[in-house]
Each structure stands twice: as structure tokens, then as C-alpha cells.
Image (cartoon, rainbow, N blue to C red):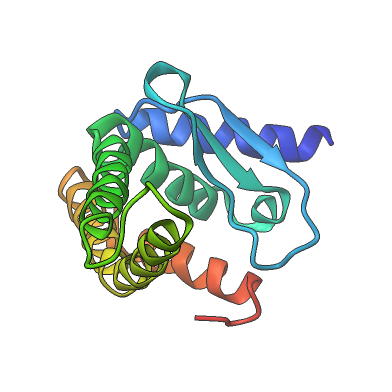
Length: 168
């Protein structure tokens, strides 16, 4: 609707007043309360995807949530995260292909490699979220240092949590 489009434009204008470049932002309607959107694409083709439900936030909360993603793209944090995930995956497959009995020359070797890689992937599920969380905290610290009130970050996080039925 026109009101929601205006709210999004007001939020983007607010973010730009904080001297943060905002990539194209796409609003997606989704029935899953757990859907939070994200960042898609690479480089200048990166897009921020937000759920339509976020348009129920105050303009300040919406701006804060989008600004965090925009800063992740603009600062290179998003690209470094993708690179880390890519290197983690390649390194894991490479290492697992050298396990005893592993390899790519036979079905048995491939199954052994796949089993090892499954364990490697599980290790990634245990460790990589810590890296991601630290990157998010660093983004918040930089935004606060640039003048964004900490209260806005806290309020936006609270609104997202409430929207997702207090899942966190």
C-alpha cells in the first residue's frame, strides 16, 4: 500500500541521514513468522530482503534493522562472511577426502568422505554462528559510534523478537 511504501522510503531516508548507503531493498510477504529476509547477491548487485511484517515497526526501528544490513554490505562484513563460509566448506571437503578409506575414486570412498563432511558441517554449525554473532555485535558498535542511539538497536531487536513470537 501507499502508506507502507512511504514508511519504507522514510526509513531509507533516515538511514541515508546516518551516512549509510542502502542497497536496493525488497519487501517480501511470507507466512512463516520465522522469516527474517536477509542479504542476497554480491557486490553492487547485493539486495536487502525484508519481510513485509517488518513494516509494522516504527519508522526508527525499521530504519535500524535495515541499516544494520546495509552496513554489513557496505563495510564488507557480508562479503567476508560469504568468503569464510566458502573457504570453510572447501577446506572441509578437502580434509575429509583424505580421511582413512575416503576418496572420490570409489563409492565406498565417497560415502566415507560424505560422512566425514557431515561431521565437519556439524562442527561448522557449532562454531560459525559465534563468528556471525561477533560480526553483528561489531556492526552494532560501529553504528553506535557513528551516532545511532543504542536504544534504537535494542528496540529494533525487541520488535523483531516479539514479531517472531518471542522465539529468541
